[in-house]
Amino acid sequence: MRITLGVTGGVAAYKAAELVRLLQQEGHTIQVVMTRSAREFVTPLTFAALSGQKVITDLFAEPGGEANLESAIEHITVAQRTDLLLVAPATADILAKFARGIADDFLSTLYLASTAPVVVAPAMNVNMWNHAATQENVATLRARGVKIVNPDEGYLACGMTGAGRLAGQQEIHEAVRDALKLHRDLDGETLLITSGPTFEDLDPVRYLTNRSSGKMGYAVASAAARRGARVTLISGPTSLETPQGVERVGVRSALEMQRAVKERFADCTIAIFAAAVADYRPAEPMLRKLKRTGEALTLRLEPNPDILAEVAREKGNRLVVGFAAETERVAENARKKLVAKNADLIVANDVTAEGAGFEVDTNVVTLLSRDGRDLPLPKMSKQEVAERILDEVLRLRGAFHKTARESAV
Image (cartoon, rainbow, N blue to C red; front, side):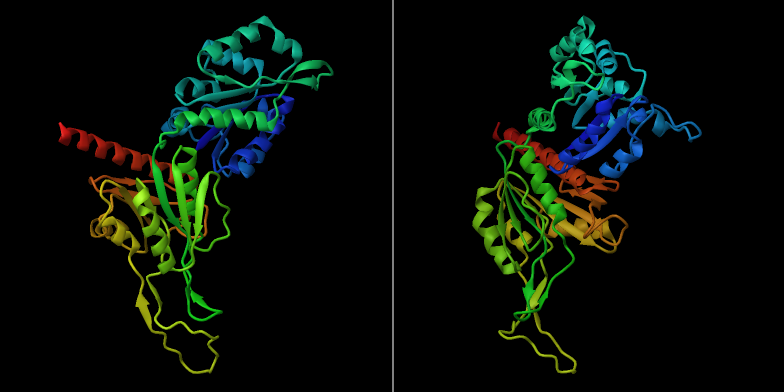
């Protein structure tokens, strides 16, 4: 999910850096928006380094920067692509702006422009928190559906004691999780996802493989689980941790992956084949280590099964997604694969492009659908790509169900 984290001016602003790390550990992409007063406590560079994303600090271009249409409507763009707005710490000032509809900076304007769930964690002086005006604003926001994470009691930076300390990291984290459950749009779906490389043994020491890290497939599995799906991840060898809420089935070779897929395909409603399965394997793997002789060596290879094509022939009403890692004529080759494999969606990318392909945390893909839609995406994190893939899967799933209903009438 993409979370926009609003940071406002207060001593607790430094704690927002810890929140960035905590949310990133669950695979969320964090976009930080800082108010002018927040920059008096923490520099934007801190959040840029932690999040790996641009930190937004002004409604318009920075002084001396180039003003353009993109900067003028950036608050709308961010509002449209965020899945949740979290403000921590939230000052009395920002609570008042949100409650009264005042939009005089980027964060307050973003709040009005967004339809995403909102979680607010106030932090301020105890008297400011208890003031009737603040409590009225809090009540107004709660009535509108904003989740308020009440401040903790304790010793405050001003020297007073009472309610006003920013709530604990875990409490804020739980509030975010609860708010995101509203987006469980894959409830009732069972996803089968393949990921990672396969290892094709040449002898007990050596094997043939590829550069796949498994990051893309794992990102899809993690996103699907967060959105409510039951997820089985069939993974080739990788050092990645199993995403929370995902059942992982470890395999080594293409033949092992084929068996695992066949055993579980009947139970899924959506199958996503993100694994980089080796096209060939040694025809005669050695039982003992192949010794160096100093002479040329010829290996005889035989084709591995085409797992995607095999299961897609018998997909029934299941939705099948394939991946196409290309180095030339990307769209043309991916469209051919879409038809040849009987897939519903192909995720295609040029693995030679900067920031795309193997072993990196970003990707640049085009989603090609069976209904003729081509959706090119700019470079973004693999977590964001995963969300966009699932969005497209749901669109196709909805179209499928609509057609089925119309046929039954």
